[in-house]
Image (cartoon, rainbow, N blue to C red):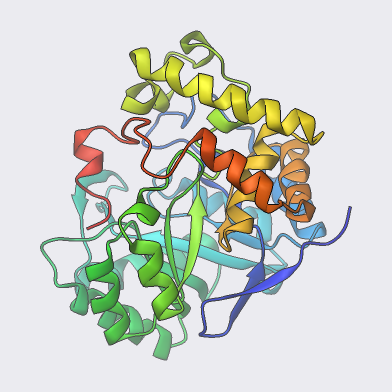
Length: 337
C-alpha cells in the first residue's frame, strides 16, 4: 500500500496527510460507548501504529472524549515517538475538577489555561500541534478565546489553532485576532449544511482548511446498516433524528443507490464517500478502531472521481436535501454559531 500524500492545512505552515484518523470511538463518552460497541484498547493502539506506518500520523482527539480517557490512550500509543505524530485536540466542553462533564461550554481565558495544561499532561507532551475550540461559548467573546489561544502559540504550547462547528461570523472574528489553520465540522454526502449556508465559502476566502469529521455519515455510508435493529440499543445514533422512524428508511434507500455506484467501481461505499470528501478539497478524519477499516480508508486517497461520478453522487443526494437533523434539538443549538 502506498504512503499517504501530504497537503498543506491552511496557510500557516502545518502540513498533514490528506486523511487523518479520528480517535473518538476508541474511548467511551461519559461512560457510554459511542456507537454501542466497546473498543479494545490494544486494537485501537495497534490501529494508530499501523496508521503511522502508512504515513497517517494526523490523530484527532478531544479532552471531552471520555472525558480525558481518549487523550490518555493516545499518550500510550505515541509514547517514545511523539515527534512522529501530529496531534489535534479540542477544549471547551467543560470538565470539572472531578473529571466530569458539566454540560456547559467554556471558552474563557481562565478555563483555556486550565484545559491546555490538563491536555498536555494527559497526552504526555509539551506541545499540541493543532488546538481547537470544541464548541462556541456564547457567554465569552470569541475574541477573548482566540486571543488566549494565540498566547499559547507564542508560548510554544500550541503550534496552530482552529475552531470546531462555528459559523462564518465567528470564523471571521476569530481569524482577525489570530490566524486560524483549520475549522472542523461534520461533512459528508449526508451532511452538507456548511456548504449550503456559505461556511465553506468563508473558509476558502480566508484560506482556512476544513477538517471533515464523520465523512462516512456516522457509519451509515458504510452500507452495512440496513435496518434500525442493526444499531445496538445503547448506540448514540438512535437519538439522532436523521436515523429515526420513516427518515431512517428514506436515508437507507439513498445509501443503497450510493452502494450500487461503489460496486460498479469495485470499491466500498465508505471508500466512495471518503473519496468524494477528498475530491472536494477537504481533509477527512474517519474514525475506526480496526486496522482493516483503516487500510480501506487510506486506500480511498488513491481513488479519483470523474465529473460524471460527481454529478451522479450529487444527483442521489443533492445539495439542500432534507435528510433529517444530525443532532437532537439541544445539539443543533451548539453548531454553526
